[in-house]
Amino acid sequence: MILSVRDLQVSFPVGRLMNRSAILGVAGVSFDIAAGETFALVGESGSGKTTLARAVSLLQPISAGEIAFDGKRIDGLRGAATKPLRREMAMMFQDPVGSLSPRMQVRDIVTEAFRVHGVEADLRAEADRLLSLVGLSGDFANRFPHQLSGGQARRVGVARAIALNPKLIIADEPTAGLDVSVQGEVLNLLNDLRERLGLAMLIITHNLHVVHHVADRMAVMYLGRFVETGETEAIFQAPAHPYTAALLSANPEPDPDKAKDRISLPAEVPSLFARPKGCEFHTRCPWAQARCKTEAPAAQGTDRRVACHFPLSPGERPPAVQETTL
Image (tube, rainbow, N blue to C red; front, side, top):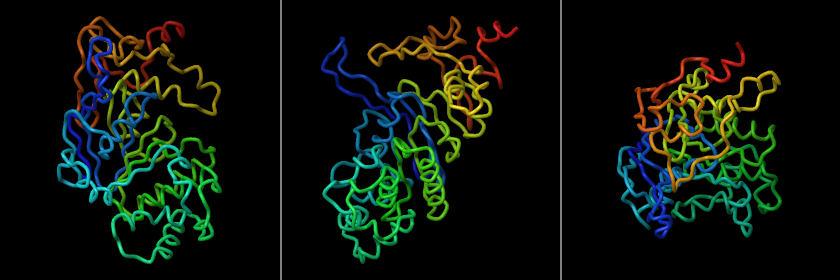
């Protein structure tokens, strides 16, 4: 495995606010990513996706758990000791333009890693090679970030990420802020590079169309925990956790009749300061029963893991919906 994460926790100090010294942003998650595989993290805003990605890339301190990269523990690395890891694990940040230095030309941006890591190379030739790989002509090398469109800036970010042939790319919302047609181009580019360069990818997104298009496996996050993990196609065909089913039912579809099948959830997400007892999703779950309010569910299964006392059958609808359709 390229990446193995076990029981990872990330906490944030809150200065004794509401009678506690810290809150859990990521609350004990485990997953693996194999070479050449794309693994996606999905969930609502604030579910802990980006925090988890930053922790995996050692940009956010962890409070418990283990992280292994290419068979070696990395969670204990600090400061300069993390530098060799940066050649093997690259990060693509959410804002395509804001993540690029406004004072640097594209040529310098995509070859910066060579200078940082002391890799001797013909930087002009490398800039042209990298821009060509992401579908940009050499003319873009002399431009500044403000002269790029969102899609072009994203391609430059991809070129920067693959500069030193990393084994893993972590992409935080790779299609955020892009037109639909440009989103497709970026996703096709990432898929193509994965196949050509043998990359593994960890993609963080709330866009389920992105997940279905590029991910081999996926994990659904809620309040910093995984509620369902497994092969993407299997989850899309038959979600087993109520939260997953609700997310998939809300996925925009061109067919207006699909709106009738949507599962409505209360909009209010519980606060991390006051996690619900039992199953943390029970306050919003249409299928919740008495057991859910008092007993936290353990994840069940092997390849397909579901943290639910009453996993859904394929095509199962909420009780209220069943009653109205009879």
